[in-house]
Length: 475
Ligand code: ADP
Image 1 (cartoon, protein in one colour):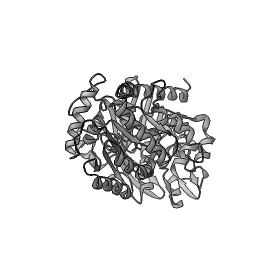
Image 2 (cartoon, protein in one colour):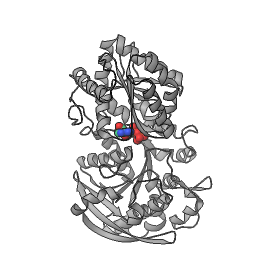
Image 3 (tube, helix red, strand yellow):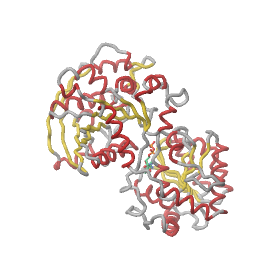
Image 4 (cartoon, protein in one colour):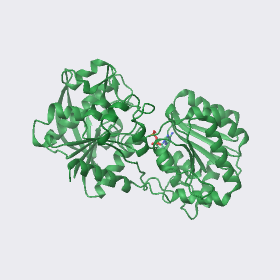
């Protein structure tokens, strides 16, 4: 199959979150299955250092909403996959990827550029795989302006993957002019223009990144007001669980670690990594204490509110060390600072994004916290399990699909989970995990082994996408 993967960020060239990882890992795994995959993404400033190695493929004039601009297409092969970078200095030469007043204009330009690029490069995919709101207007544009032009456009099938329904690309009504059509309810939602809704209405198929989240987003509680639109497409809407790249996240080969380890030597491996990190963060080094870690964005989605109401009691009375890492909301950062200031030998924090420290923390951790309010899939808990850190999670979205709760009767399980979004339940579960760690060492070791042996590989994920593409093509 011929697939074009469209993403507003793609690892290792640009990244703000899990989307960038997916944009690199899924195409790589699809290629292994024998498909022809290319990635198309904006040319941000950080990419310029690779410019010498790129090949120019062409240019196109983009006309939308009364504006006109030129984009250039550059190609660089990375990991065997052609990355096509869409260059437009005005829209993409910025310090950050998102967060500008003209984001609607920027990603409308990118969306037209994806479609115009096919004609400029005379290369049409069978599957156009779109991701999140930034590229979600493309199925509408394709239908309204391109399909009739030639056979290449006519036979394209579109898949829209929703990585997080909270982010919809919702803009003031004037943005409707960027669609280059008369006013149309396809992209209107509560008197605003909504890019994601255009994709939900018009894409051939839609998916999100875990089966439970797929069900949840069709409810009032988790639908962020698009539950009705998604429900309307439920026959074309499925959940496919994300995976992790085991060439990047594998404690046996991870070059960031003080000591690499596998299932068999997890205890000694973790010990060395933990000792190093406790010294590094200037915490009291007592190797009998489990290390509890949080790594993630500091936004309300992640359940930091629960932590801020429950964690201090666990710090005070539980026997453990804590390292809290993340960046985002100031208010949540202050909570981390407060705990670290009040309990300097027990709690440390790291505000900021640091890939190397994150890897070291996964390897050193015994317990990984992810009490999310909602979670489309979540990679943190998958990585934690792979590194033998048992997750304490709330049973929502992908967390429910990937962490099987420890059952004291059967001995099954790969972590600990609680159902209600309630600080008391979170605290109880964390105390229970600490108690198993301290008092039932054999049980703990068994759960760790069970967690590390889980298969969250990209190969499994790629096979599911392949099957979905085949359904779309009717093969
Ligand atoms: P989301 O995509 O909602 O941010 P995920 O759990 O799906 O959450 O993915 C988050 C990824 O980003 C994980 O790989 C996690 O390790 C990484 N990450 C999050 N915060 C940081 C940070 N401050 N430093 C380094 N890596 C981080």
